[in-house]
Figure 1 (cartoon, rainbow, N blue to C red):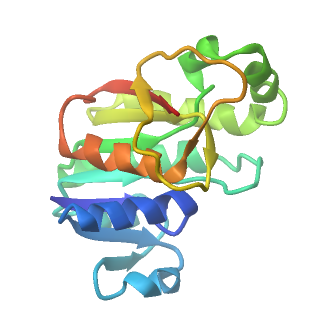
Figure 2 (figure 1 turned 120 degrees about the vertical axis):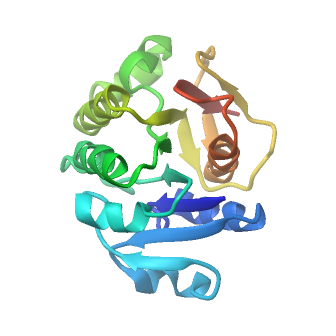
Figure 3 (figure 1 turned 90 degrees about the vertical axis):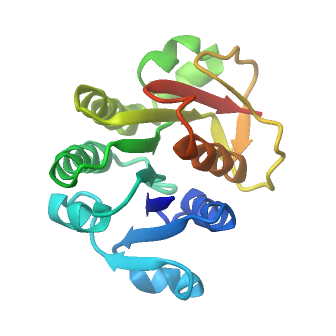
Length: 208
């Protein structure tokens, strides 16, 4: 599979790159700082560009079978409209070059998943994460409204621990306490989802 990865220089995106390569995919990365991918230079195609630019995305998406977005804001809770701008650019670029399959990482608590959250999670989502989650919700409306073959992935709190390989995935999952999931396991699911149709046009909540 020819696979474009957005957010590849981030902590989850790096796992996506490694797992896609392990699966035998031909990997392309769109990155503002190509030098951050120096360790993968001999194994991936790195294109300098911005995930919020339609032109940059169209260039990177040409010839791809699917796109995986692991875009994130790191430790920042400032929204900066990153996700809504990237979604708009992606929908437009996809229509231009004829790529439809997109696996997009969001966060548990965004959109309809908020209703399944426990009291502790809801308190966090409507305070500290309110603005960034609002932007993510806008991005999802944009993706759903287009002609994309999307999968929206909703991980609970992300950790940097090793992959466990026994994560739970469902359109709705019961939540207790402070559930979490490793970035490695989320990446594993996203690469597998991109390779199949089981999660086509479905929401995927993922947690340990």
